Image: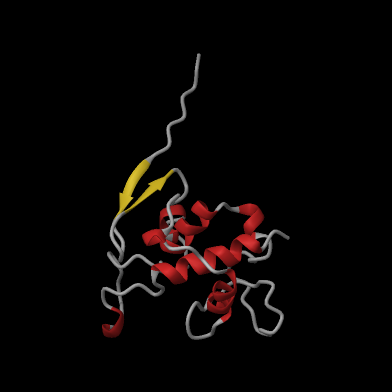
Length: 140
C-alpha cells in the first residue's frame, strides 16, 4: 500500500496581502523583499522593536538580560528553513495554537490591540525578512 503525503496549501490573510502557507512554512519572501542579516540582528536585539530577547536567548552577548521562556535562537538556522522561520514570525499560532509569541505580521483576529496598532503589523515585510536573514546565519 502506498502512502501519499500532500502538502497543505492555504492562503493566510496578512497585513501586506495573503500569502501561501505550504506545509509548515511560507516559501515566498514577504512582498518579494530580500533580508539583510545585520539589520535583522539589530531588530531582534532591540528592546523597542523586535523584542525577541524578552522571551528568547540568543548569541547577542551585549544584551545582558535575555529570556528563557522560548527556544534559544542559537542554531535556529540549522533547525528551521527560511519558510519555517517566516511562518513562525508571521503567525506562530499557525504552528502552535498555544504559542505566547505575538504574530509579528498578522493583523486579523487579534484581541486587546492598542489603538495605535489597530490594523498594523508589529514588523513590516522588510523587517520580517531581515530577521529571517539573521536567524538563518545562526547555525550553531
